[in-house]
Image (tube, rainbow, N blue to C red):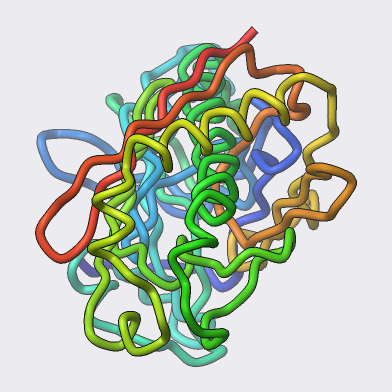
Length: 294
């Protein structure tokens, strides 16, 4: 989908700071699919789904106009706006852009069930906080389980060719992950171990044969990490949707970090439990992470 707009800058987003309420000025409003309206504002607390790595679903919520009437925000997409022409590109058209130049800016496109707000009008936006929190619990748990997986799989590397994570373990998660999917309190990560990774020294067959021990070790590590509070940060905040944000958490006194565009809980103490189950799959394995928030 393509639209002509006056949008020239990336959206200022506040979800990285955990914000669930905010306001903005409408920059674009157009007809979407199924009778919905597409709305771009200069700022928003809404986290959109990414067309590049669509692991975390979009926030839900409401958008309220100056007249006090609220309309449901049923979805939120990541669009690309050309800062020179104002062209707004969505969906497969955005994906087809591939690697974009500096003229293309990422914007949050709210999918609103309701009438078009006027360009230039002020709106207030509120996110479904309970749904956001459950997704944040799942996303933070997914990062913790990735570090636990890396630690539990150290013994199955026979060479030093792999990247190393912030805790000093070969980064199997980074090297092998091919897809990720988040839902409320749950994440599912799929890993593929091909010829390249085998050449780097990862012994998949031995890893799969020892899965019960690997799972037990990963869950014991997770239990230990959750036994003490530890702040979790996502920086920079606030920032534009274009910004590259860094997730950080102290685990065993070391700085665990990875780049992430999602939302998270603020502290390890916000998680009551995180457990993983790993299953063999064709050319790799699938890790299921289940979490409970406090």
